[in-house]
Image (tube, rainbow over all chains, first blue to last red; front, side, top):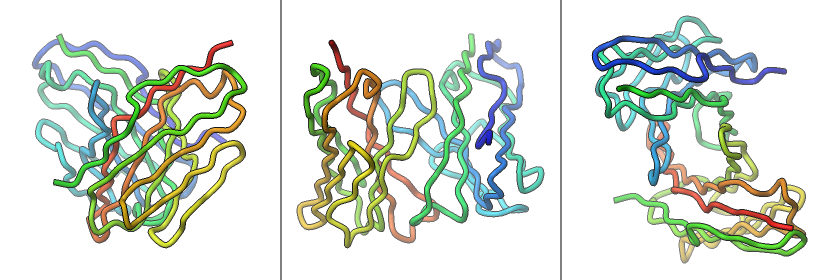
Length: 114
Length: 113
């Protein structure tokens, strides 16, 4: 039972490069999320997808785009990476929204932009 | 501003001892409060989730309490083990907030021999 799987685990980018973080869940969940975690701060929501075919901005969406490819997969794209996007990124999923539902997190993707 | 504040920031205890972590929040109105455990280099793992009407919830050696009147929660760890060394994160869900969770910055717990 893999749960939420993210790739890559580690990535170093140069400023201006683009990349996509991949996420897949095998729990048949409807809702998926992308968070970033920075030192001294709580996790912050970048984008979420309440259900297949929908995506919405979270607290810190600037510089990112997302695609809900199908029910299982939710990718996060950095079009032109900036040093401020150096962070740990977590994909998460829940059965339906956050209210009352357990949210399951992936293992994280460590991204460094130089 | 909706906030979640945790204390202490870090804590060191001896194996076998109990400890209590605190969470104060200003998120309002809220629908539930969660505690997560995050091992170093790993993703957060859910420990408990409580609605505003619940006072306590247990998960093995972890017991969370909630006082919605004072907007305080605590996580009590009994008979600590080395594997309890981790960051413990308090998370509050905003009612009708469009999937809005407010995360605390966590309490870093280290359990030593």
